[in-house]
Image (spheres, rainbow, N blue to C red):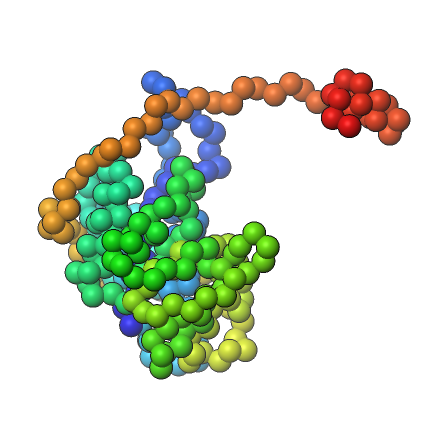
Length: 272
């Protein structure tokens, strides 16, 4: 099996926001991997590897769309264990969601992949429509917000437990397919590939790159493509009208007794 994982770099969510010209100022931002993409890579690696053995069940390819000169985050995913990388060299500010989806779908077809794994959303803008768009472009089944994944190798299908409002919905999708993953996918027993013992428990969370992995990452092949190589025209039909900080909240009040709290809630706030 060949697994494609799309990843994105984002401004560090722990940094304070800076505003300029009606938008966000990224000039001094520290760039980090999107956390949900780390979950996607971890999912792919758990599907691909056989714990206790040396064989690999799948090739894991990591795909980044952005400036070729800024590949640090892609290298980090290679250090985690992905086999090779692909960069579509393009200016993210000139791409909209539809174009990004077309680029991913084009790489999926070019590589003849069996599975696309993505994070459920991008932390910088809370966008979560790319995997669904790609599935539509490829005309393949999809399972979004995956909490568990089990691979039936013989049937060439996945059984996916999806996060829904009232619990977990289980669905079965044949390959090729698109899966976007949620938080619980990196719990110790969330991913089963049919070869690693079902009783095996991974360490919770995405794995950290080892020193050996970091060294090997520098030797792994990374192909650089242009959108034109994929037959996709660059375009951006999405426009940010404006970005502003929310209004400051008033300072809270401290009360000494429950009775005083109740009095303020009923007479001042009038919420009860």
